[in-house]
Image 1: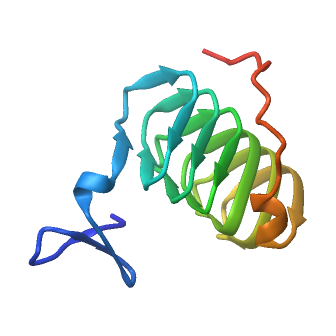
Image 2: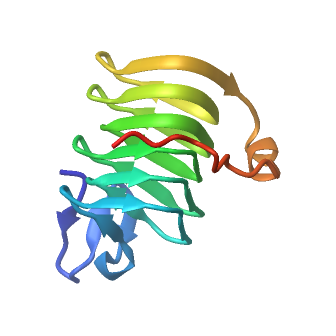
Length: 143
């Protein structure tokens, strides 16, 4: 879908070469309650009830769902998010995305069919990166 295998065993994503051993994946059918912090790429096809922070790129597949706050460099969202989304570079909402909450990003791309209910602030990446606001942990997570 978003990756293609290359001759050297790496996956190609646009102009970037992604080593599959550096990709964190939460598969469909998996439910995690808690906080995820990573430096690399992460793909969510399951459900996360909690906050996620990555210095890299976040992919949320069509079956992926996050109920909590997100902080990342880039994000491609095909699934569902309920919470605050802080993206220091490009946030891309695909046609199947369903977002409820607050978005703060430098760049935003929304495909036809995506659903977004909430607020959006376009700001510089420095303001997003320097945001010391901790994601709220006092959320009631739906089952």
